[in-house]
Length: 486
Ligand SMILES: [Mg+2]
Image 1 (cartoon, helix red, strand yellow):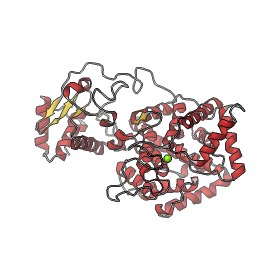
Image 2 (cartoon, protein in one colour):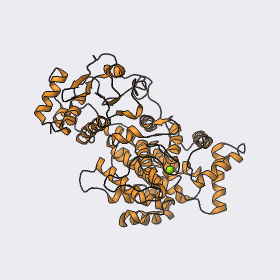
Image 3 (cartoon, protein in one colour):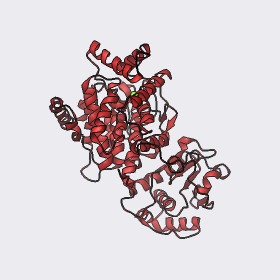
Image 4 (cartoon, protein in one colour):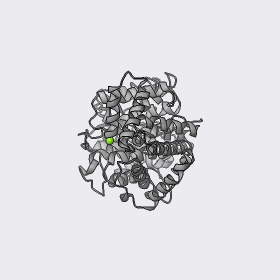
């Protein structure tokens, strides 16, 4: 599998898209709170688990259990990998999750009681089967809510993807409908990453022949009926319809992109009931389609959750899963430092807003002496370069902006330049002193600074002059600078 720049962006967006949907939906679970229809849902926390603002819930917590195994490159259909996922679920249970689905809870507790009867995944799968035989009702949405990452595990092999989706679903959900829904969604995620398309029907032929008619009708209904129809979304079939209807009915007629992602999640949460799960399901596929570069920075700065992860960790887990294992230790995202030490410090204040400093990599270690308490990084960072001195992780944005003159280098270039500028403005509105930097302040930093000054009402010529003065040189030009001047 060749990882072009857009494909890498899309793979990186799967888990983080899911996490953003989850954390955005948490406050509104089961009508615990309503949101303003104009501003849309906000990551204010609360919900069933009294979550902190930006904290994700069981959906992404369980997805992280899968991702920590898939990131090693293991085949999720093997006993060893399924054992590792099952053990992850049990560790998560032992940590006392604030919120856990009833079927998942019953299966995990039964697994604990029968520990020692065999390999963990076999005991768990058997517990799920027995629950199904007893109750006849195990098609809850708890397998679908965590399946997006499975779509990354074998990007070049749709059959292997389907087998993995079904095996991971069966750990806790024996009902074939739960497995079917996971096959369809994981395959849609795979297609979205590989081809940049939204196609839920693409996986129908991966289902047993006798189920294909049912699922064709199910998808048809999701596309015909209003999203608000799908309120009983604790059921895996309705949850899939709710998520797909939210995506399908908000699809713009031209230029689908970040605005579609946001509109679809607003719609998903507006349906009500299991809001975080429907938004987590939708968010995984939307992140796969549009990439990490389409996610609002206020969201990616805020999201966090068990087991002590933040946005960058989910991006790294997703990329390692897509590449089937960790990269060389000295290359991104494993590298401890990306700064080679060759750049000189700059930290040049803007004349019309001296609390925005334009900088290079060399300024990142000087945040405390510069009095900076927020950072917008426009380049890739090493593991030790995140959260520089005196800057909280939630006040440090990492922007997926590629320094390239190739028009396909960035999927949403103009939107992203503006989004980075909006984030600088947001941090300034909160009273922060912001370091805006890339590697050498040649292309990315001046381009975003120009968009930021435009938001403050400066015309292009005045803004360009201000940036030239701050940098002490003319900007080199290039695609980003040209687009920023539009
Ligand atoms: Mg949840």
